[in-house]
Structures are given as structure tokens and as C-alpha cells.
Length: 265
Image 1 (cartoon, rainbow, N blue to C red):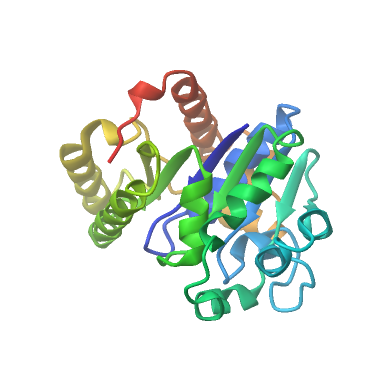
Image 2 (image 1 turned 90 degrees about the vertical axis):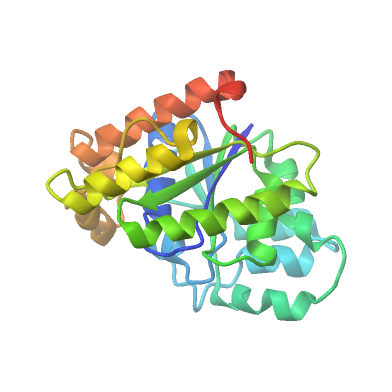
């Protein structure tokens, strides 16, 4: 089982698009794949046609019932998507109250790790869409994953979000038995603009081997796919965006077998 968390402490950088695209590519290979929506805004949940404001069973349910009835909490929350081999653990907006509700309760940082341990024989590949803020939900995601992907929009304001994310990762690593490998994924790259070109150059100069050696380009097909609720690699497999995510998945698969190639904080 391989678990990727996709996170950045800045919104609008392509986290959900990255999760949807990579997961659909894995599912197309015939591999049962699970995606988790850990963001109370529920963008991933909405993508697959569920309303995070009204959904009954969700990741919120896991936090409420994991101690008393974990199996029923998990399997009642698990949803099929419109893609073969692709399943969803959805978000609900109630998840935004978890930090206040849980307070100083011990053990709540490992709810998702325990959940995925129960599902390990069913799903060889799991991707987690993280919220853009540090709290119990992001802590759960980072505690559960094997590798962190950090999508960074290639514009200067987005680079600050990367600094915050790496600082958070450094703090989380103090509670892990070993450092969490990460990969920065440049997104929304527009080769026609000086801002994108200079931002990418800055990313590589500052973060070196921590940056993926290619980019996810601007592609209007992403918007069309989101509107249709269909992953871009399913709807338009030959689009620039689909091809870029296929290349990213190939890089991640290589790194999975060569973990020393990835940097650690």
C-alpha cells in the first residue's frame, strides 16, 4: 500500500486536481484506488457529485465513531465514484469543527492512519487531499502518508505557501520515526508569461532536487473536466494536463522504488 498526501498551506494551487488526476490514472491501470477528502470545503467530494453540506457519512464520522465501531464507520462512509476502481472517503463541512471539539483529546492524530490500516488489503494506492491549514486534519494526513506532494502554482505569492508547508513538515517530522519524503510539483505553468518562468527558476534554485523536473501546464481542459465531474485523464487522455500527470505518476512510481532519490526535511 502506498499513501500520498497532497498538501499546501495555500489554496488554489491544484491540490484537488492533482489528487483526482493521479488517482484516475492509477484506477485506469486496474488498481483499486482510494481518495480521501480531508478539506472541510469538500472540493474533492463535490467533484464526484456529493454535497459536503448534507452528506450523512464522511471522514467526520470516522472521528466520531473510530473508537466504538470503526468498521461500520469506514464502510458506511466509503463511496463509489463514476470511475471504475476509484473510491472516495468524502468530507463534510462539519469537519471544520473538529479542532474545537477534540481539544486536547489524545490519540486523535492517528484516526486516519488507523482507518487506512483497516483498508490496506483493499486499496494498494491511496491519495489524501489535505486542507490548507494546520490542524488535526492535516496532522492526521501527514501522520498516515508515505510521501508528501506539494503542488505549487508557478507565481511568486504561491512560493510563500511552500515555505509554510515545509516548516509544518519539519514540525511533524519530530513526531515521526523517520522523515517524510516530499516532492514539490510546479502547477499552472504558463510558458508565455515571465512570472511563470521566473517563479519556476526560483523554485529550482531554492529547493533543488525537491522540485519535480517537469511541470503541470495551464490547460483549460481541467476546468471542463471539473465541471463534468470526470477526471481529465478519463475525459481527455491526450490533453497536455493528462500527459503531464502521467509523467508525474511515472516519476512517483520510480521514487517509490528508489526512496533515497527524494529529499527529506
